[in-house]
Length: 110
Length: 114
Image (cartoon, rainbow over all chains, first blue to last red; front, side, top):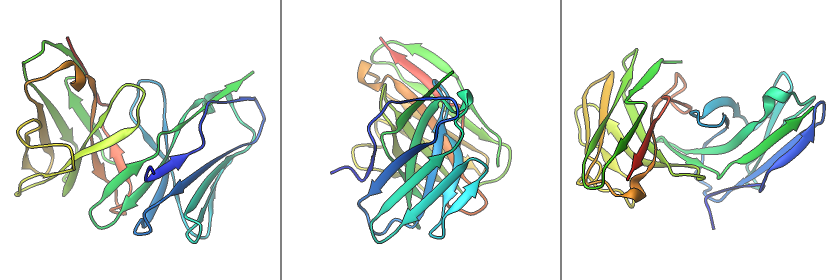
């Protein structure tokens, strides 16, 4: 079993749609959680950290359920510019090692 | 977040040769990391590079194949030795952010081994 598993993609959605990505992790020692975005042929960029209380940044909402070892990302009102691969990432503290999911590709169409 | 640069941005190398990749950060950082992203795959940690000590390698990666230097708090190098086509990947360095948990990545070095 992979340490971090994500929904298989790709997700093809129209502009304005709401899309949700799910992720599960297997290591209960995981202490920090993130969503990264990776555009084609670019480095991953931090989209948002994920907190137990849930957090929102504009059109993006992230949720964490430690009991179920589950992380989610909701994107509302999708834009063409949201097209990218979204990576679910957990951090095994204190070593600082990031474990990446395989990524979910999102394609937003006009 | 820190500004991170890598050199070279890409290279095409022949089998059996070695390539050294440089990572430069615009501020002092304690921990730096080297990752590999093989074609169509996600990122895998190669090693953690701390200034003043030997790098810590992840399972499946060895110092003879991927020697790392960390001469100061703003710079690190990763060498890919005795390359084979299976080493064709993107190699990325990263540093921890202010919270010490999130990481920020350099632009990557795209390596093709023929």
